[in-house]
Image (cartoon, rainbow, N blue to C red):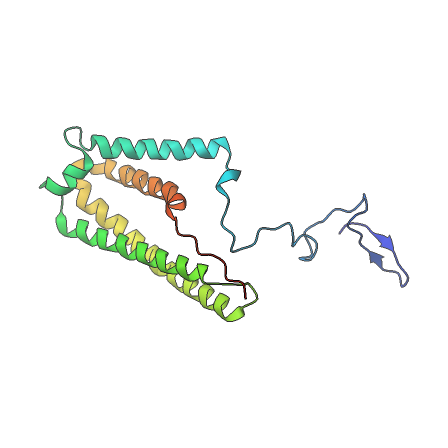
Length: 188
């Protein structure tokens, strides 16, 4: 704990504007205003050039995978026409990804509906929905990844796993920039 000004009664009063003040982070009141609000999205303008370079590398490698496919046809053509692909696991994996996308859209719209932080009922409803959806989304995503790997294994064999992971990471890079709905705040 940092030092402060002695007061009557043997205690010490902490002063924020004194030159010797340094917050240790022990008390929530000291640095509560300097912490990010939990519902505020991260600003894309605060990204470093290394993060931007990593994002560009994921996107370029995913574009490479999609464009070159199996060196004869691109990935889209392979998904539509190649007989080596096991179709049922591919379709079940696509359904799993669709369910995950719907859950993400539902929880993000529900999060936007939280009008003010002091409305405890809606905040609790959003927190409960998000927390209960996390295990289901994780399990559904893992099962979808395994189904995609099983269905595409005859084409790329052991390279299927890094290819799918590359496509997944490219989607994770793109998703923060895809939401273009902006709900105006409701002032009561």
